[in-house]
Length: 161
Image (cartoon, rainbow, N blue to C red; front, side, top):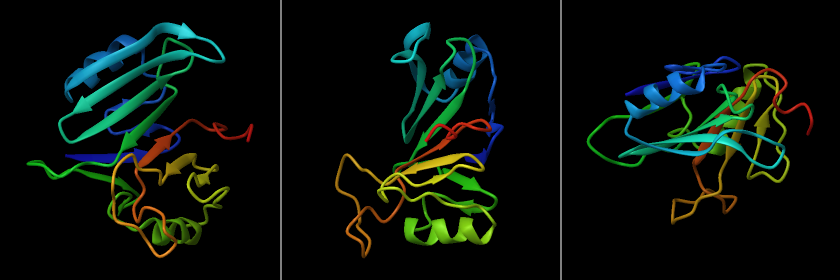
């Protein structure tokens, strides 16, 4: 399975702006889904659809309670399927984090590193996390070697930061 990140338009099969009903149907084709705060839209709580594939998860954010506003893909786990999550031909979960960020910068994308665990490419917009909830290989900086999740949002998604 190939999942292509296409910021600011979405990910393979899930364009930003996709209506909630269509999103739930498409997400169910990946595996089991869990819907929280259905139709809800507030500053502190909004609708999310979690797609649970046997080897990965995707959290679909519907911040307006009606349509897809961001998609957060989590690192695939080993299993029978070959799953690749890529951006412009680069596998974002098999390229070490300390190599991926400079690669994005060479593509002309400024990176906001912040604490280092949650770097952003706000012009795309892509947001990454290196935080892992389990033991993973560490890099020379003591943090997870690979990104654990990547979020694709619409234009301006990180403007308020």
